[in-house]
Amino acid sequence: MAQRELLSGLPVDWQKLKTMYYYMVLSRKLDERMWILNRQGKASFVISCQGQEGAQVGVALAMDPSVDWITPYYRDLAVVLVFGMTPREVMLGFLAKRDDPSSGGRQMPAHYGHRAKHIMTGSSPVTTQVAHAAGLALTMKLRGLPGIAASFLGEGSTSQGEFHESLNFAAVHKLPLIVVVENNGYAISVPQIHQMAVVNVADKASGYGIPGVVVQGSDPLAVYEATMAARERALRGEGPTLIEAKTYRYTPHSSDDDDKTYRSRGELMREKADDPIVVFRNWLMTQKQWDDQQENTLLKKVREVVDDATDYAEQAPYPDPSTLMDHVYYSPRA
Ligand SMILES: Cc1ncc(C[n+]2csc(CCOP(=O)(O)OP(=O)(O)O)c2C)c(N)n1
Ligand SMILES: [Mg+2]
Image (tube, rainbow, N blue to C red; front, side, top):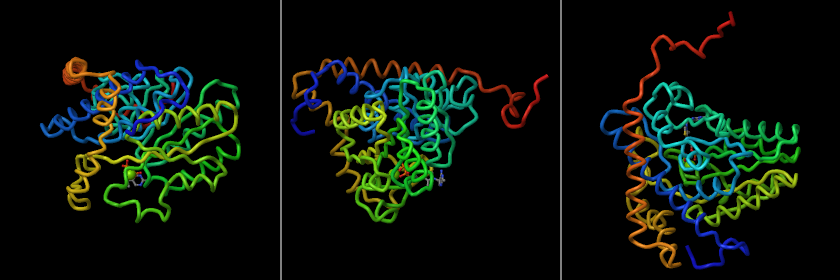
């Protein structure tokens, strides 16, 4: 991150910036633990946030989870943690346990949902969550509710019809909506250049008559500022904003993918030089806001949180087999 003025004129809230860093590290370490559990044969499937934490934390910390709602996608571990889903709850879902708040252990891992935390559940067809968020934003407008809705998706998912339909509808009706595209350059093995003919996904915003903003996803402050501006615009009744955060994913698409078949190790190493966690930590240190002792204390704390979540979820019960058909077929009330 280049040296620059912080938060354009706003006073610097160092505590908030340290909170940003905490959530980035927590997400990364929780995600790394999931891969270990998968490789140990304890969990069937992992899909990662690694590399995208800066974009996710920057957006989520600019929102107000007490009034705002989100429709996240499968990579948004850092987003849902900031919105209040606990590491224990995340691990319950990951291991398909009974008390998983997302689905009681029914859905695939990373299909996050938590009504009390304003995280709307989604399903596997990508981009449907953008239409759900437009619906939330319409409800907020019609009912005069104070918050906004935000939806998250990858760049490949912007090729789906729901992206166009939702943004067009939200723009026409000036709905309080932010759509965040976490552009990591690939849709599984398909590079962006085979997915669309524009360089920036944000360019698509002009087709809806709304602002499209490009931000560097490894810079959580840039993402935070862009989201604050978009949220204020939404609250003023001026309609949606499309934010594109340029990111990169460090893991294969999922634990079922071999990324060596479509991207070189050299490319991966080059991209890792812009790791949002390393860049942000180095910047905090140059600002004399962080040192090795604070780093060690934080890593120890995060390790404890991740260990606790793992132990808790491993010991938690699976759903009772007698509930297998619950929520599958309609059951008339007695
Ligand atoms: C409608 C639909 N088509 C295909 C898939 C299979 N699928 C799951 S993730 C994915 C790639 C999405 O890429 P992108 O939107 O760039 O998100 P990323 O995984 O890169 O973060 C695909 C094709 C799906 N889940 N839903
Ligand atoms: Mg992608």
